[in-house]
Image (tube, rainbow, N blue to C red; front, side, top):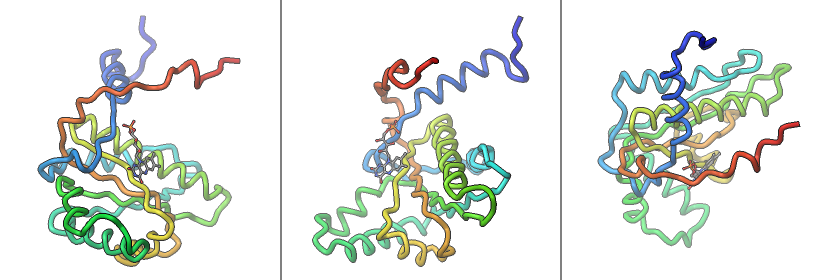
Length: 197
Ligand SMILES: Cc1cc2nc3c(=O)[nH]c(=O)nc-3n(C[C@H](O)[C@H](O)[C@H](O)COP(=O)(O)O)c2cc1C
């Protein structure tokens, strides 16, 4: 007899299979500027709201960049990169080409609330939101990757996106489509990472 509730064994197995098979796909391998459908996006966004959230602080804030806004964002990232490193090796055209298959960006922030829940817990909760979205993108057959926004670029990107100064940057997700979602990845041995007392 199964004690599973409310999901069937089949449903649980499907979730485990998808979660354990998920891989990141480089932006250079994304093709066609595909984006999830509105229905899929609704589920993806809901997954970000379905994470552990100590104290129900709801610190996650996301900026969605898609359609014609995508090109402008990529060019802005290049401009910001050049300010920080004038000797950056790639030309603007080469940099833009690297992102040319990306269909959308989700830039993630933690709006840290002053309260008894430590800031780091609020940030971890947003990280969990990002991972949930990566998993669901993969489940719907989209390529996705999480990139950091480095500290020296942070302020300028916040200015460009018109977000609050105190929001903590958690990086951004790129979403697209790619045959690479079918790649298999060697994972570390579970035994090396779990110690049973
Ligand atoms: C917090 C975080 C930040 C990351 N930032 C970057 C980044 O700035 N640039 C990059 O190329 N990849 C970045 N990655 C992506 C990882 O490199 C990528 O997930 C990994 O190489 C592939 O593993 P996977 O296929 O199991 O996801 C980041 C991942 C995490 C978790």
